[in-house]
Amino acid sequence: MKSRKRVVTSPVVRSTITPKRQRAGWPLRATNSRGSVSTPGTRSPVRIEPGRGGAPGTAGATTEAPPAPLDLSVDIGRGLVFANPILVASGTFGYGIEYGDVVDVNRIGAICCKGTTLKPRVGNPPPRVTETPGGMLNSIGLQNPGVNAVIEKYAPLWQAWQTKVIVNVAGESVVDYVEVARRLDGVPGVAGIELNISCPNVGKGGLQFAIDASAAGGVTAAVRRVTDLPLLVKLSPNVADVRPIAKAIEDAGADALTAVNTLSGIAVDPGRRRPLLGNVFGGLSGPAIKPVALRIVYETAQVVSIPIVAIGGITELRDVLEYLAVGAVAAQVGTAIFADPTLPVRLVDELADECRRLGLTSHQALIGTALPARRGSGAASAKGVEYRP
Image 1 (cartoon, rainbow, N blue to C red):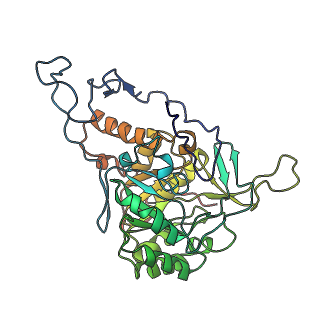
Image 2 (tube, rainbow, N blue to C red):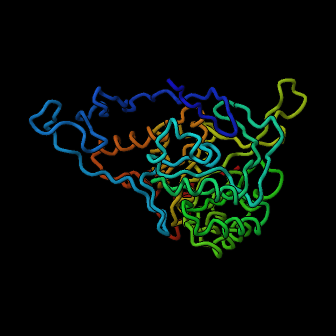
């Protein structure tokens, strides 16, 4: 019998990060022998896939009324609609094909592929990754084959998928961003662009756009002029106040924001003689950055009207629900994929379970429940309480 193909991602990360333990009082997910899913306190079984079970009067039939139709779709704008709000973050899922043997990619709301540049990049010198308490530092350096190779090799495969693929675009100048976007425009299989103007682990370019409102708005406007593709722009947490930057990006024509990219950090080698990473600096991701990301989504949601896709430290359903509560319409799973590639698909099912448990026909009612009421012009801290370093 032919052995199962071993899935290898680039870069290879051996992680001991494990999903957080089930929090006290949180509904446990159980699967019965017929493949149905139930949660404590709900009627069982709750059927996720219609059409299962026998006809009335046959063995295995259920007398329960079928559940109300559940709509988990997310409309980002400009014709981009995700089937559900669970996405995978750039740099953690390759180009999607790397996980094909272990994950049904068509169950995911959208895939943000690896960062793509105008020309191929070999990336940063090793070591490139190291674990940290509650996360990891990566300094891959945007290793990728370049936009032309992505269009030729991967776009035809994406065209056959039901899930949407968003190309993460990086560059060292406005000209780079514009040219990559121009080449992607109209390519079948490319559903949208995520502008990475906030990558903290490359030697030059990118970062300066995300820390200045004028620069962020300028690169966004320049890309907007050359493409009709839905445009998402990724915010940096490495700023004192993200709100004017987010507003400038919205005013420049972005369709949505993604928040946030990694935090800039370093690690020291075991001998304490030099920085551990070959590029010195790396991007911190994982559960450790979740409070920061929650704060940024919370603030940003109060100053912009375009959708926000949250990123940062998602390991279980409760994390997704918290991001929805502070104003995100969807969430990207990132670092946890290295420990459990099946997590994104499982979160889709668990979110559906939770909506049914609450008697909802959509997750939309869960969005913004923790936001303060808007006042006046929509000041980000409506109650006058905020922390600034």
